[in-house]
Amino acid sequence: MQEDRRLAVLRAIVEDYVATEEPVGSKALVERHGLNVSPATIRNDMAALEDEGYLAQPHTSAGRVPTDKGYRLFVDRLTTVKPMSSAERRAISTFLDGAVDLDDVVHRSVRVLSQLTRQVAVVQYPSLSRSTVRHVEIVSLTPTRLLLVLILSNGRVEQRLVEHDAEIAGEDLTALRSRVNRAATGEQISQAATALNAVVDGDEPTPPAMAAVVDALVEAMSDHRSDERIAVGGTANLARFGDNFESAVRPLLEALEEQVVLLKLLGEATSGGAVTVRIGAEGPYEELSSTSVVATGYGPDDALSSLGIVGPTRMDYPSTMAAVRAVARYVSRILDEG
Image (spheres, rainbow, N blue to C red):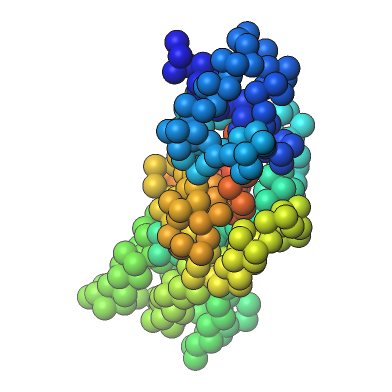
């Protein structure tokens, strides 16, 4: 019973501190949260929580604030992630459904996530290496020029022009398209490239221009630039934390300029589809010990890439976790539908 009450006290202090940005006292807790005990009992619970490292007292006469350990317990004991309101879900859907290509999806995701959470949003572009070939279209532009359109499961579309010496007849183009898609469709790009090369190297006769088409497709599949691309939005939200500029904001601003740092901050968020929360010193960089990261994977089986938010540890974790999860699910659906 006492443990449940102390957990309720910790939860109330976290909620009030996030909302007011002021240390929380026992009288305010009794008035705001209806804990049905005296201020003296609350003070005893707060002292016990402080002794256990869950709370800190900035000044002798001040109330308490949560420590990283307190935030950790608060997040771990969340029974459910706060659901998004219907208006928020509708806003995400409307905004993201208007995207016209992969770049647009990524940049819209960053914008809507930063607006919902009032934090800095980070979205890693879908990883090419984990994607599969959805379809290859081959279009004849002239008798000796072909347009190749490679469509991947991560929403990426690559186009290549292929010039060849001999004219290609309609039936040969149909056969070429069929052979290419039989070999590549549904395969991860590394296996697709191997299968396409095997078609050219095999004993079976191949349509004209097959070698040039395969070379162009394999080249498109081996372009790994997107694996390291990051989109960032909502940096202006850090202005809300001016009181913590030196300890929290400045290091984070410097981190936002380093793509490698951002990739490491997102960490292993793609595993299992769960929302990952890393608080303060749990992160990989000591200089970002006043920063928290809330992230998750997106894409088929949550395996394509990751997105999330970074910001000072004083944040609304339930709402932020809900927003990160919701945006990831919408992006996954959009990419899955192509």
